Image (cartoon, rainbow, N blue to C red; front, top):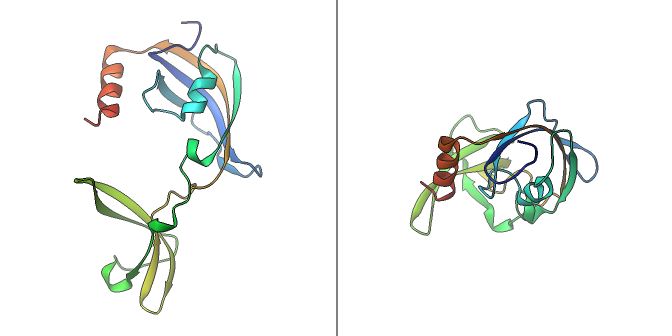
Length: 159
């Protein structure tokens, strides 16, 4: 396999930094994903990689909407401390369930403040609202197996 096309497994050496150059992910472990619109990597990165070969590099600036989403102040709630797991500390993540459109799913919130018997929980992704720069170099390209394709199609369909 010479170039990245649909249904190829791509392995990248990469880094992810914010626009000020602060490292968000140093890419200690290579990133492998199934190419071809399976939502396995940020779409602008996948578009930039299409047609690339081993050794090629890309740098893609990701706006918040292209990465972890815009910051939503409606995802910040105040909850009595007694309703939360103990011991409770600022910075910890709490897992819960939320019902949206009839589907229950796992949600996570970060404790951002504790005072006067209440805690502030932020349900935004920690990188919501942050523009990022993804830099990657193609290390390997191979054809995907039928099982890898079927698994990716199932995930995308919500199965």
